[in-house]
Image 1 (cartoon, rainbow, N blue to C red):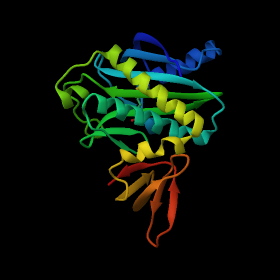
Image 2: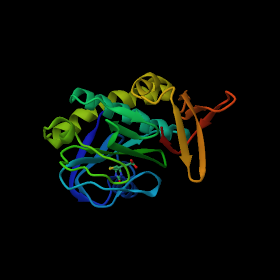
Image 3: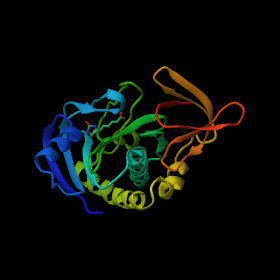
Length: 237
Ligand code: BTN
């Protein structure tokens, strides 16, 4: 798939901006990428904020057009996360995937992904910490490529590299759904087979992470051996 990048100096949120653009330009093509040097009101999963220092991190959103059913949404995020992990591997950093949408390095978050359904498509928003020297801790420990490797990256080049990997993963996913990328996802999930807890609001379930279903849902083996699908929640070990 081909991407066309539009860079902006400052936007509140690339996901929101892309939605607003679509309302004005309904013919905006699939593969449109909106990237910003500074994001002032970044949005995370579950209504959380996504904080990102100006000029130091990649914050961008991709428009994917297609008749995707809502059940495709979680695995769009997962396909994108695999691509980010591949990129990090190529940059010399071993990355782990944490269901449903985190990329971690040494247990610290380096990337978050927020996919949103729109009429006739999906917007995938990606925030990757790149040149942040002090990632601190927001709602969980965070890190960046600079912290992990000691080297700064050129943001434009890194985005180009990430998009070329993303194009392969997204095509695989668009053709065959999560099943096509499941092996790659599971290969980067260190918690597979381990005892995990999934919290969704007040509901909490503990069991063995047995794998992932055809739409990317987490499969939890609970006491008694029954395997139940879990569609949403925060995972902890
Ligand atoms: C999360 O981990 O909760 C998801 C974070 C997603 C952040 C990205 S940054 C680019 C895009 N625009 C947004 O407002 N959010 C996503």
